[in-house]
Length: 222
Image (cartoon, rainbow, N blue to C red):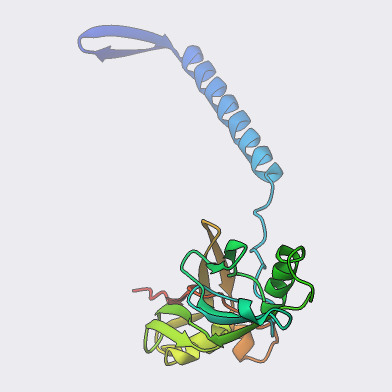
């Protein structure tokens, strides 16, 4: 038996065997491609875990905008009080432009002692924070979204409470995202506050200055 078809007035004739053979070949090729896709999918490297780099609990970190006092017990003429500029640096006598942000006062002290090692008899330098300009942004399903200012470092939970707390009607507490610009790169962290509020533990997440906290909204299905 044959099947006759017309396309634009041109007759074409195919045998049933030819049609069946073509269908079998197409099905075999599709099955092969699907199998290969499944194998490749199973061999893919799993996505990397959420980065955990953060400020250690209880450790003060110097930030742009902080006013610091640097004292030299053995050379008081070098004493200075300066605000850390937006580029994270201060300008010090004898050594010039010096990075100060993103390190603890103790770490900065050690760096200064090393920088002044050939010029000072007394290897002692003290760094003290006079005033802090710690600020973060809270947005999404909170009661008072906006900029949060503090004289101390905050945890993500602290910042949300400063923003009036969760919008209980809309907040998805399992999806809280921290967005951080660090060294020209954007990092994101996802936190589950539902577990925390249920008393299931978890380490406090300490923020860095200028972090953005986004509280996702619940998904409503209509």
